[in-house]
Picture 1: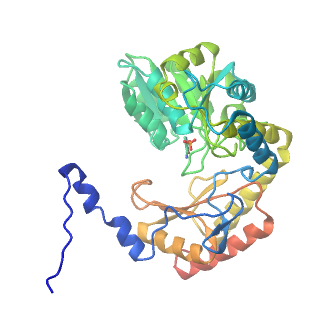
Picture 2 (picture 1 turned 45 degrees about the vertical axis):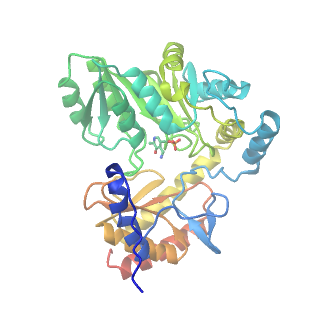
Picture 3 (picture 1 turned 120 degrees about the horizontal axis):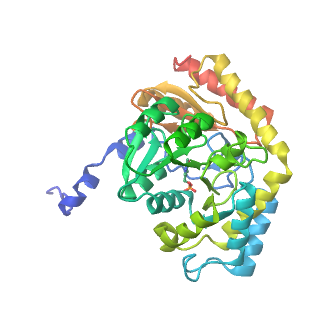
Length: 402
Ligand code: PMP
């Protein structure tokens, strides 16, 4: 019988897709760590297949995604308003709870006004591209989040990068672009390194050069600040930060994003941020969940205290074992392994032992800086963390990382 070979035809633009085999190869080698299918709520324990896993890879820092109060608010909002808004904030998609949420967010971060987008990613795309015009500069940290970089790419201004969390490098870069208006955009807490932005020095440099400052507080909301209200409050610099951005997808246990600033800046963004105007608004359930999460974060400061004691337990535990945790000083803890394959092997070991962590490899991190990214939640128990540390220690020894 002649062998039948199925021949696929495709346009040249798609050739790269047919040639992309890295993911298939990793799956075949049982080393593919992405798109793992979870069949339970996002909590300190999740279910994958039929197996319970200890979750150390979630951004739900406050542990509120499965909180009965947050879930009830989402369900009640669905009952009252339906499942979606069928349009953008700009036209038919603004509900009274969106406005209530914006007022609540502005008060939470101590700014005059706030604007709610459908995701944090869109918030950065819409805000940066609306503000940075053709003759302007956007000055960003080399480790800024992908959504900031893409926001810069969508704008027509010039993009200038400074060395990670290095105010001297920022000053030099600012001095190299004297002939235009400037917006500095930084993360409050860096999503891979887990360090906190050196905001006092950054604000100083900005003021000397007449630059505006925008802080992405995706990983700082709930975590830093006297009321969990972010990096600017943590440093008592809220009046020196022009724009505060946040997402609902982490401590706020929902999905959505916001930008907070003066009334005038928000009014401008309402009319120029394309990612807001041309995209449907957050669902009623999302808005209600975020509103309830803010209330809980403010009323229950013990969550933040527990988050920090869990953070120190994990961070010190890993350091004591001899792991390199880089610059981390927050619930985001990178365990620096170095090469991609080493990380995949460690990930596999931890996964098989029931520990969920995220491998982050080059090019998402610089070459030879591949990490196992651990993130800690307020709701982890001491015994969960002890168990994780024990397994991590065993795996690290077995694979020769410590
Ligand atoms: N900024 C930072 C620093 C982030 O880490 C993320 C998400 N990982 C975003 C923005 C985008 O937020 P969202 O998930 O709401 O799109």
